[in-house]
Image 1 (tube, rainbow, N blue to C red):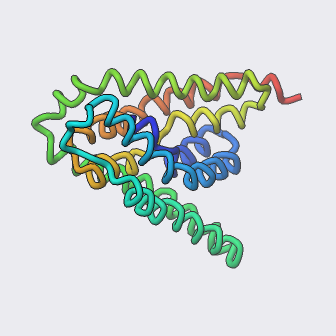
Image 2 (cartoon, rainbow, N blue to C red; image 1 turned 120 degrees about the vertical axis):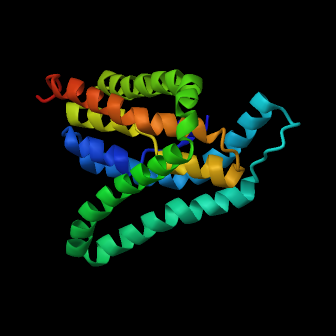
Amino acid sequence: MIIALAPGGATSNMFTYLFKGDVSLSISLTAVVSLITPFTIPIIAALSMMFFMGSETEFSLPIIKTIIQLLVITVVPVALGMFVLSRWPLFAAKAEDVLKWFAVFFLFLIIVLIVLKNRADMLEFFAQAGFATLILNILVLAAGYSIAKITKLNQAQSVSIGFEVGIQNGTLALLVAGTLIGNEIMMIPAVTYSLLMFVSGTLFGFWVSRKPDKTAS
């Protein structure tokens, strides 16, 4: 549930750029969703924990505290970015390329550190959550792209929505599970998803890049 609730991030923007999607749409969706998820993640995650784990669970998610923390983590950077873009557009354009790759590198760094820390248990992690997270990733990639096509959006927009729905912000999911909730077991799906989404996302990108844009006219 945590990885499903996580928004798309810089990684979805990167995939959109690499596979010729609508980058402006992808960035706009990331910005809008970043304003919404600080409220949706704590509430739905807390309700999910009560439903799946029961009220007796030793782990809890303080909703108000989590909302404030996520607002600081997600909304403040977006607001700062919009302010810098409005005041210094040339500097913002140059910084965007650097920061975009830094965000991807930071995600890789977190995953590598987690893998190194739990290297003896990684096979067990994938046995527990690998198949489920892979199926989730494939389904949401296909669903986002297909729904966009059904609603007559063009190819570039459909690619953007597919990646925005299917490529989740693994860093944020790891933060919620490992820091805000404090449960390392809940971090396992975020780890497996973050690793698998690069493979499935790349294959998905090559697949959609071969499809003609029937709405181009």
